[in-house]
Length: 218
Ligand SMILES: O=C(O)c1ccccc1N[C@@H]1O[C@H](COP(=O)(O)O)[C@@H](O)[C@H]1O
Image (tube, rainbow, N blue to C red; front, side, top):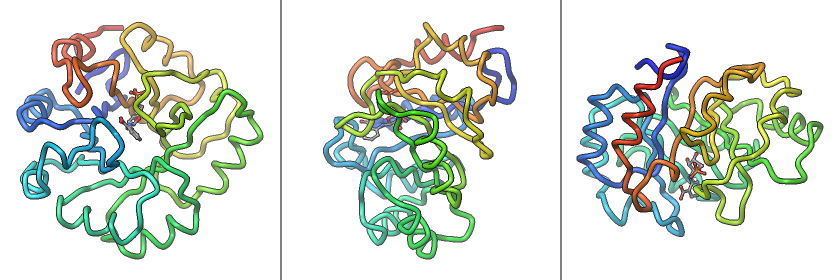
């Protein structure tokens, strides 16, 4: 999929709840599909789709998003929905990730969300990255009491001073309006993660808007 100025930048569409939309996005060669397994989210996927329906989605980029869920439940959901990636969006620590990985298939990738708050500084962020060095990917998002899906961006300037040493997803209120600023980042994201800014209602994606994004030229 060609996105923005770079043919390497991948796209994750998160918070999906409708099979027809997933099918359309697969046809448009979107790379990753995020399903929220957090009951308090308005995008809680199991209110709309069964594990069987999720399993039936034929794609290698299925991401389950979990918030402070037990490792055993995550492993169960991974097996039953045939997920390819686990995104940990809560307060999970490195020990939790290690234990979780021991329960998951060996090719399973873990994305650790690093939530950036108003008072987060460089040294705190750098320490968090060091702590989570066993995760396969980082995902930077805005901190909030809802954990995610707020549509609020954090100050990307904070990333400029970090040594990230890992592929990362850029997230948090990403919209068409400021997406062009990504090109100024020192370490380019592996993927951008879009969610609430591309919706008509929580969990219902605005496919016209996503199409516009996919057609953006440098
Ligand atoms: O979308 C949610 O409801 C959600 C709830 C709890 C944790 C994560 C959630 N979504 C993730 O939040 C980010 C940012 O979303 P937004 O662009 O700010 O709306 C995205 O990575 C989703 O994976």
